[in-house]
Image (cartoon, rainbow, N blue to C red; front, side, top):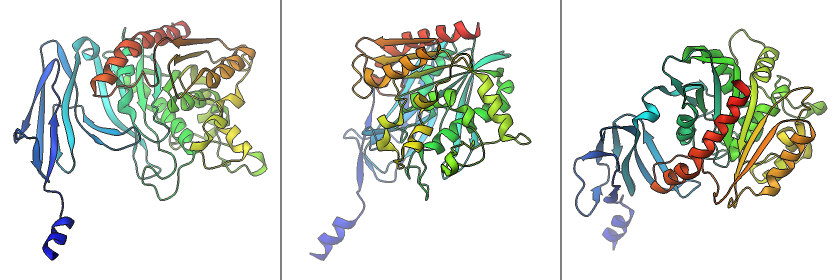
Length: 394
């Protein structure tokens, strides 16, 4: 009886490893996976990917159950990935056409700040030979509580077509304690990360061929809110705190360039952001207050782009907004009031409803369904977005 009890408490001996059939390339796994897929716990696997002619590596990855959306993927963008088997998982590699990446210099994991446990990073997609090109900053979605900058790489590649933009894909803290931080992160902290990331991008943009004075912001879902916040709330950047004392709510960027005042950073960000493309996101915090611990109306208003739309006479911020007709999370009632308010203030707005599309069609993940959805909806509407940006910058 004692031995049975001891056996029950022991670690699982094996886990099921499933190999996903690749397209437009191949990969090897060493040591070889047994026919039944059962691999001893603790085994280190080496996965090496090779693209077919005419293709380049997108990612080597493994996927397991867990996380906000039911599954989580861990990806690397170099040909070899080492994985220690400690759970059931699927392994695979994805490849993209050469013409999507052959004229790009891609820089991964530029750390711009670390206000908590997680280093905050962005990736850069710069056309080779870029010089003084407008910058696009992408802010990913995921309920303010999942995903990172990698999920926007499909959109980043589409927006660099034609070699007219340097694209930066930005990560930020997750709300509450989901990053493992001892103290919870609040919604204004995430907005402060976005402003800190933009300040860092402006400081270093010219090294990648970008013009720090010409910025477009975009993002999807939660990133739709955060990209609208970047465009609309930048005049609220300041160092007097976000406690509401004497009615003061000011965003302190989580990165500050050395030698610059907060006032200077505020003005540089506000002047640089020329256009916004917040996709299928909410714009008034009352519509996502379940993600926010503070419940007072003043706080909710301070993190709501809807409450701070400027008149075009004061500041022009053209908006390009898309939403899927079948989106079960963001319906028209959450978007149309923002569109109407922008128009009432004289702002240029293009609002497109994508027939047949659901939520998150700008996401790029290794699973075939997400990539097919991006090909069907993300690619053509990224082209529409880019055309809108062109109308501002070119």
